[in-house]
Image (cartoon, rainbow, N blue to C red; front, side):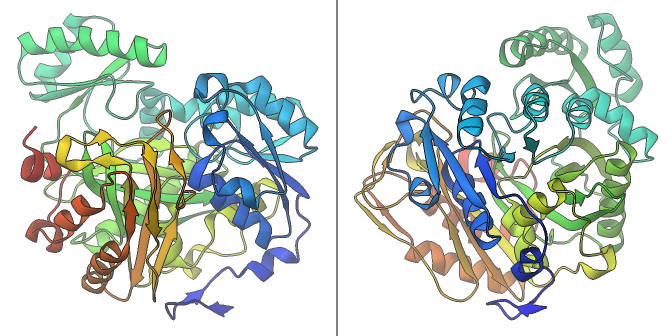
Length: 469
């Protein structure tokens, strides 16, 4: 056991993993701050790393930390990070035993997962079979029902035609939500308040889903007005052990993209919190899931929770769970993939204090959050007790226009939520990124709003209070 910087007991010290037989070399099939995060975890475990990069990522800080680096193509991700053959070639040349996919890009690509395993390279994540089952939202709803986990009332399967959609909508009541079965990030999603709008919305959702995901399948759910978005971090090994690392509140969003995450979820009754976390574990056990994942729920005004999907990978906001539990999720992922049993049981994992994460994006909040690529002319990183900053950016770094706009994550951990908010405001004040616009100032506005301070945020909060769009 060890005690962390914030005075909380760490359940999983790095020294535990140093005693285990582990991989010698791992390739990170990703970029940016998550690549850097994995490299650091590996370094502490005595594992060498191979990093890949595109021409657009030359100069990123993570490349300085890896033991070996390979350029795999031009800046466009379709010609680099999404090119399976180039990633596998780099892994073979680098003589690695495993690949960590991070999040995004190929992280939830079951075909890539299968190819890794066929090349005798371990994929640090769930099996391809579990990934395929859970990657289809309609199938995942069926798995949830089998595990006795509540789902939002809706169609039993994919909608075959408009008439079926109308029939189901009248049974469950308007308004309804049409969702793409292969969707994400709000794409292939439409709200319909009546029958006339529903018919058009189904066609629009199918067209958008086909274009975005190559799958036009959509299903229908009851539209829960002003819900909260709460997710549960889970991890399971190959020996039948599965646990949760409690929940994260992710309701502070803009157009279905998360901005601020925190744990514990404020104003959630402890009994309901326990039920939700137990339901998440029950669901992943039901589909023989292994490694880290996130089970996502929406919560209504009466604190009823409903399953919506599983993210079969590590999440951007995983540090929030690490801070309140003391468990290193990246190291745990690697150990599980190497065949090690989880070294902790559910009763060992407690939520200690409160953690908040702000995503620092290269966007201009004063001009409708338009992207702000370019050269960072000055960068000062905040510090102090309970402050953590994850970023691949640095002074002189040129933020490329080709990828997601997130350039860093600012995380704080304090004994109480009020203290965490105060700490985050101080850290945001200290953060200096010049030469480009960032969302840091917008986060300060959100954190100081009474609804956020009182824990009364739902998924419409940002648009309703700040944007009116």
